[in-house]
Image 1 (spheres, rainbow, N blue to C red):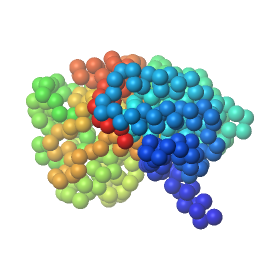
Image 2: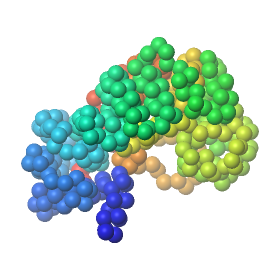
Image 3: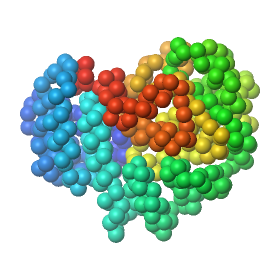
Length: 420
């Protein structure tokens, strides 16, 4: 009984689940017995019996890892990707497919990961169609419909979720999100008025009808600071005071709004945050834990409305989170600067505190931020005309998902490093 409770808790931890599969992958390369290693991992993860087709795929995956190639050639993954594409989504649960997706991210096979993730979303849709589907399954299927651009299907799921007891606030937020992604003409914040606090309404008065510059933390040598500063509202990330992030030549000297993740909020709370907040118009926390580091009802401080409950076992990262938050308040336009969707790992000086360890972005992809979901969401907002960007951002959007993942694999994948 105790072991069941411990495993039940662990199975909710994506990072733990990844390491279970990773250990099985490494063990199978060294000692053979590929099927037994996967079987033990599946039992620990609660995925049940392994279908023969998945065993065959696993053996091929392990075989490529065991080849110990120091670099990949274009043909090395083609057969494995083809066999993955032929697998039926019914072979495993949606969570199981996502676990395999994260393993492939961790060992550096980004296109293979994309194929396995698509199986997971297909399985989520099938599970949501069942007459005995749980609320969790219908919710997962709703997101899968949105990513598949089946907005009618997604709204049908919302009605079913409402019948199953999903709260009105969450449904209103999800309905707005569907309308936004569908680029329907009546997309505005009135449908989620019930979600707005007094702080939200004050913040909305700053954003509504204004031209917003959203400036990311990626270093740039392009002199676009003047263009940034010409916008009505300038939004940045993790500002902790001083001139960091306010280079007048490449980032723009202005800063009206700063968004903070939990770690950034904690660091700021341990410093002279009164002075920082006095220098900007609004500070926005991405989660309640971050907000909790500050006094309750601190002026000019608010919390984003989270869509995490709708997402398939992941979180939004800073850029998409801020964009969705801003779009609720109907700006006249948003232009994205100094952002390349993680294709470069550097950040402007001062973005991280002194002495902080460099960020392992692959770990972030696995543990917290599904890079495909982030790109798909941003790309859809771009296609629908909700956002535009500087030259680099437009270039990344024009790549499409497959092209983007090719570049992401060059930056973080197995192209030029030995496989684990």
